[in-house]
Length: 100
Image 1 (cartoon, rainbow, N blue to C red):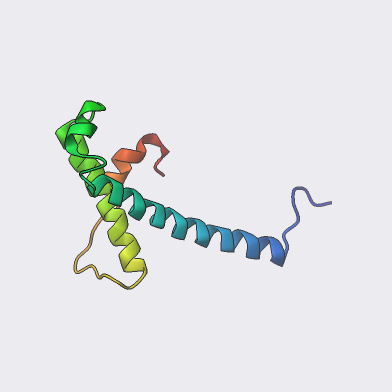
Image 2: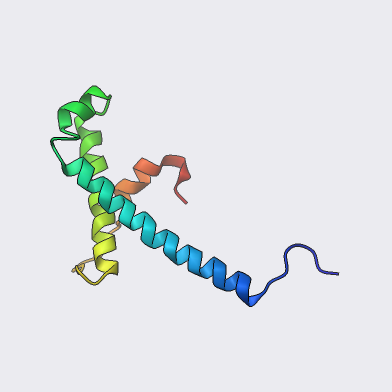
């Protein structure tokens, strides 16, 4: 007697497809959020400072989303990376304990 959900091709296809779409959508969402961070009419440093972010934190937030945009651009073959880079360096700080 087997326990748990049975493994079928359909289940695997659905899981694999969903994972790829989730990565694509998450990178696209990061690119859109980066545009908000970069738009000084929406989120200027003064607004972020008023919300409680320090100058160093603002820099780190922008760097994290810039790295995600670069990662997305590389994945779409619209950019290249000449040297090694930990795209997750600043993002790890934003994600905190949720980063694995």
